[in-house]
Image (tube, rainbow, N blue to C red; front, side, top):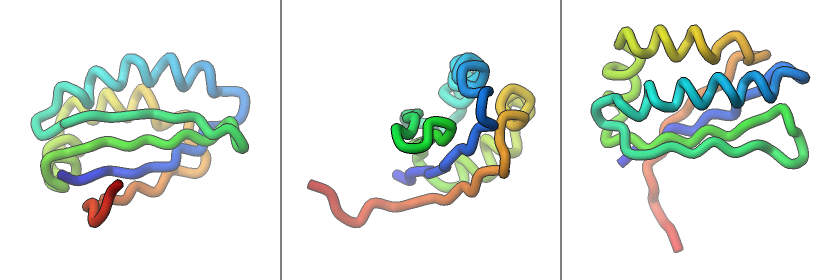
Length: 98
């Protein structure tokens, strides 16, 4: 299992619109092959920053399967207009937990 990690810097004042759009977008990503789960959290200290964590079976399920799909184009249309600057996305493999 791989965890996709993205800090999403939403344009100040657009948080409510982003959250509404995300509710639509999450059904898109949740339908993709290799998708396991996701969580979206809002920062307390920086309320226009969100933490997106998506669990995938493999990195390729995200980078090739999802990003190469028509569904990703819908995802982009719904969400990418809210980011400034564009988020950095990284993938993690768990090495320890408690």
